[in-house]
Length: 553
Ligand code: ATP
Ligand code: MG
Image 1 (tube, rainbow, N blue to C red):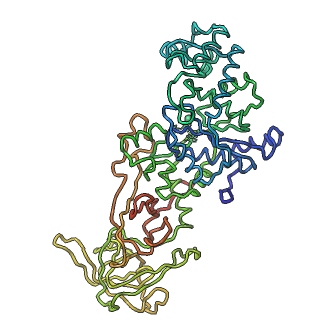
Image 2 (image 1 turned 135 degrees about the vertical axis):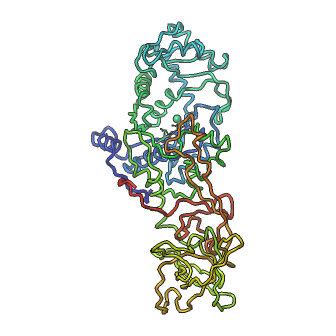
Image 3 (image 1 turned 180 degrees about the vertical axis):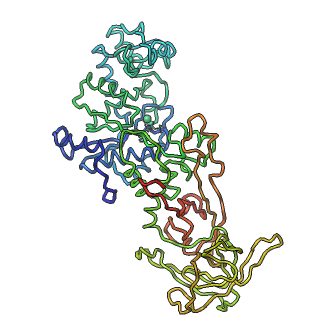
C-alpha cells in the first residue's frame, strides 16, 4: 500500500526480521506473516495494531501476509463475523491476495499429525472427566499428577482416537493430550489437550468432524504449513511458546517458524476484549458492533474515523513488549491530523439563535461563496445562501460579555464567515427572559473579499441562512466509560450514561448536497454523515487539539 505511513523500522520485531534476512535465515522477499483472527466477534482497534504490524512488516520487506481464520471453536463462530472481518481488513487498506485460509482447511492434516504423535508415544487418549483433569493438573505452586490413562498403549490410543473421530463417544468422554510433563512449572506443558470431542456443526466443515483441535495444537502447525517466517502474537502467548516448539519438534513438518510476542494494545476509557464487547452488544448497552462509541473498526468507521488515521495511530504507538494503556487523546490527535487536511469545511449551527437583519433589502436574498477548504484548493468552492434571516450559534452571543469577548454582544460587531459584518442592535426575549432573537444591522460594503467598510470587528463567527439551511440530527459522542481503565467485572456499572447527546442542528445546504461524507463544521468539530440513517450526522471528534503526542497534554 503506497500511502501507508512509513514505520519507524526500528522496533524489536523489524530488527529481528532484518537480522534474519542478513543471516540468510529468510530470503529477502520471503518474509511471510499471518493475521489469525477468530471469527467470534468484530475486529477492534487492538486487532488493527496486529493487522498493521503483520501486513506492514511483510510489505516493508517485500513479503506476503495470510489472512487465516482461526475457526476451531464452532460454537462461537459464524460466517457473518468472517465477512465483517474481511471487510474491515480491506477497509484498513490491506490486501491478502489469494492467501485467505482457515484453520479448518487443515483439519485432515492436523488429524494425521495427531496420529503421528500417538504413534511416537507423544500423545495419549485420556478418559478423566473435566473435573478430574483439573484436579490432576495441580496448581501454580504444586505439580500435577499423571492420569491413570497416561500409560495406555500406542495401539489402544490409536483405536480410541479413531473412534473419537468416528463419533462413537459423547462430548467430554475422552480427550487427546500431549504427553509432556505433569510436573512442569509451566502449566501449559502439563499434558495439554490437543483434541476434544464436540458434536457441533461447523460453519465450514458442517458435520464432517466431531472432534476439534485446540488452538495450541492448530496454530503452530498452520504456521508451519503456510511457511510463516515470523509468527507474531501477543504477550499472553509467551508461556505457550514452549508448547508451540514442542509440537513442531515432534512432527514431520519441514518448517519451524519462530513465535515472537509483542504487547497488546489497551486504550483508555474503553474495553477491548471481545467477550466484553459482545456483552455490550447483546445486552443493548450500545446499538450494535458498529455503534460509533465502540472501539471496533466498524464503530470507528461509522464514527467517521479514516483508515489513514488508524494506521497513523498504530504506527505512533509502535511495537514493544511493555503492556500499557494508550491515551484516547492520541487516537483523537491522529483523527484530527488526518481530517484537518482532507475534510471539506462547511458551516452548521448546533444550537440555533435567530438573527434578523433590520436593513437587509434584497428580496429573496443572495448567493455568496466560500472555499470548501482554504488550504486545499482542490476541494473547490461551494455556494452559500444568505438572506435577512439567519441562525447563529447560541453560544456566540453574550448579553453581558466577559472581558476580551470576540463574539457578538449588544452594540458590538462581528463578521459572519464568508459574508458581512453585523452589529447587534436589539435583543428579543421571551416571557421567561430567554434570548430568542437578535435584531442586527449589516454593512453592505463589508462583504468578505471586497470589504471597503473599514470596520474592524473583533471576531468571526459561523452562521447559516434560516430559510435555506436544513435541520439535521447531530449526535455528539462522549466516552463510553467513565473511568480510564474499566474492569472486566465492573465495566457495566462504569458505563457513561451520558455518552450520546442528540441535537437538531441547522446545516448549510451544500453539505447536505455534497457526495462527501466527512466534514469539518467550522469552529465546531468533525462530523460524518451516518452510513445507516440518512439525515443524521455523527460527531467524529471535537476541534480541540492541544494534545501533543509524546509531550503530554
Ligand atoms: P479478544 O481478547 O478481543 O477476544 P483475541 O486475541 O481472542 O482477542 P483473536 O481474534 O484471536 O482475538 O485475535 C487475532 C489476533 O489479533 C491475534 O494474533 C491477537 O494476538 C491479536 N490481538 C487481539 N487483541 C489485540 C490487542 N488488543 N492488541 C494487539 N493485538 C491484538
Ligand atoms: Mg484468540
